Length: 268
Image 1: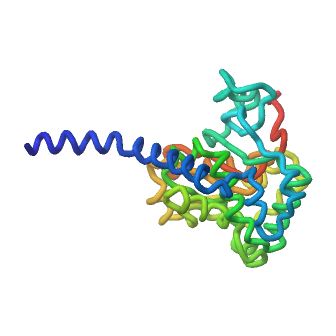
Image 2 (image 1 turned 90 degrees about the horizontal axis):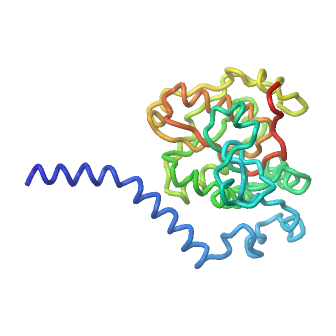
Image 3 (image 1 turned 90 degrees about the vertical axis):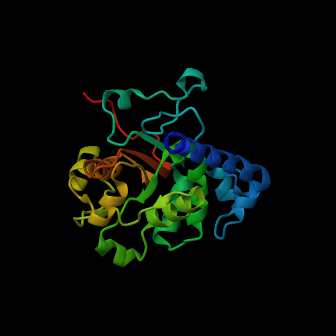
């Protein structure tokens, strides 16, 4: 009997993660049926304070098919391209395995994100989390923990909150995932990435991130969902993903609110 108990215990361990992922997927579908206000394209969700119906209607949400590696939209319909990668990702993959963005970073979404980030408009955080929950559903289903991109303590003092953490917290809570806000630390106070070339951005954040001792124990051997507000060249997310993987993470995926239309050129 003890032998049989051991066999069943091993079987449960093997199928346990699949059961959890299935429950998450069913939970999202049930929420969309019972609570349509959670859907990103519903008028009810536009009732978020500070978000007008006009601003909502101008947001360019990204739909499948997208590049599995960087989240860029493909100008073709699903089918065999549903899990394909763009030429740039095939030629030079990022350190993070996959990426998803809820919308394009354009004039409409930029205004909302800047209002949230610099205007201290925190009611946008749970809304952005719901957007990511929809766009990054496959990544959430396979994630073990959620980690936000950190701010340096000097920038945190001036801004008073970390926008990535404010989004990641409700995202992890609603998905039933472990939230590890202190896994990554920013070791250098880098200059802003704005206005820099792709190479300049990479150099600016090189070795700028490290994994804390407490974080190391909670990310080792686990698949991490890294969360940020915007994906431009991918330099910051790349540096964070490398630090997490070097510290023992099994894999890192990336989820952001918005991404620029084109993050990088093909290597020459």
